[in-house]
Image (cartoon, rainbow, N blue to C red; front, side, top):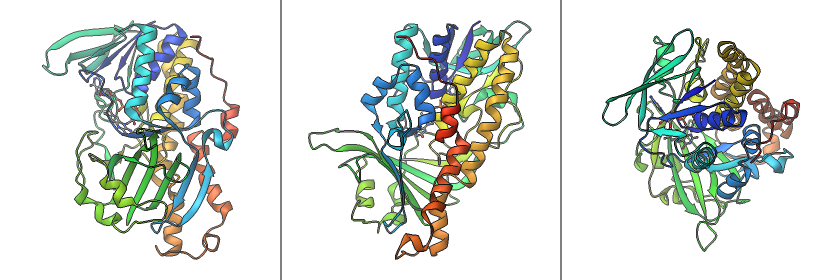
Length: 420
Ligand SMILES: Cc1cc2nc3c(=O)[nH]c(=O)nc-3n(C[C@H](O)[C@H](O)[C@H](O)COP(=O)(O)OP(=O)(O)OC[C@H]3O[C@@H](n4cnc5c(N)ncnc54)[C@H](O)[C@@H]3O)c2cc1C
């Protein structure tokens, strides 16, 4: 058995590590000429951090991430709506990590190279298509910079982990349209800033119609003053947007007006935004869930299979869960075609529900509810607007859909620990 993996993002790298643990050879082909720490903040919730711990990555992740302590919700006047503990602070066995996406990718790359050797990842190879015959699956490549053809690679299975603009997804589903814009544009940055609230708080504030902020630290003590790297996302409803490119520079003048008066006693939002050395812009997009992911020996994983709005901290997490499920299926079923079917049956319906929940009722639906009930005005006491039970029920409902409520996590089979 040999697996060809297209894409060295979070999904492709995690898949390679699980395959290594199962003793299944694989090779990873990545479009980028070198793996550079791109992106900004990302959250890994306990359902996914548990899988990374099983791969022996907890010590490396703890060194570069912040262990998120709580999730807190405010209106745009800085008034507290709801607070709940996160990760281990909420009694989970595993932590929630707030981490720079590039740091997470580095941890995965380092582990893979250490375990599989420095040729484990081939960079600068762009997948241009896939094929299969009765005995194998074939991925075709060209050099990503020159466009010169590269030798096609043959394996028992090809897994496309090539993200939102997946060429393999397009080949399998040629009539699908481009990613669907949600009506919300996002601007993101990272600022060096003193600890906010608990120093490990994931903050959501405001609502999309007038402007929403997500703020959380992703690295502790980055200078002698004990400041942190703080990731922020400004989200605004607007028809104006461009194609998603993770490296597209953004302009502060396009969104700062919505946040100019957000001076809270616990955070000066415009000052935090202005402290970022650079700003990235991208639209909030997803795709309609697909009816199927696998054709014979070829399948999809992660964003290639189920791009979703980043409103529930689940994009990377679901890719990690896909990787675990796919390797479990390959180990349990000797016929790779059968294994891909089992994987798809397990993961497609669940992830489709997460895509839909992220559209309608992600965790920040709490903010929408309060926005609507107050008519976007300050409140005297939050209890007069919404009860603690209602808020908790909304938060818990999302956890159940995304598979990180404590009950379903403890019911899930324990991952086998990596022997390193
Ligand atoms: C550059 C970048 C920055 C990101 N920044 C953030 C962020 O700041 N915050 C956040 O929450 N999420 C971010 N994401 C998305 C997040 O990482 C994913 O949603 C999630 O981790 C799912 O991972 P994935 O492996 O399925 O897809 P991705 O992480 O998108 O990885 C896909 C990989 O496939 C490679 N690839 C694409 N096409 C081809 C091809 N034809 N041939 C070979 N390789 C190919 C890409 O270069 C990439 O390395 C970013 C993704 C990328 C690629």
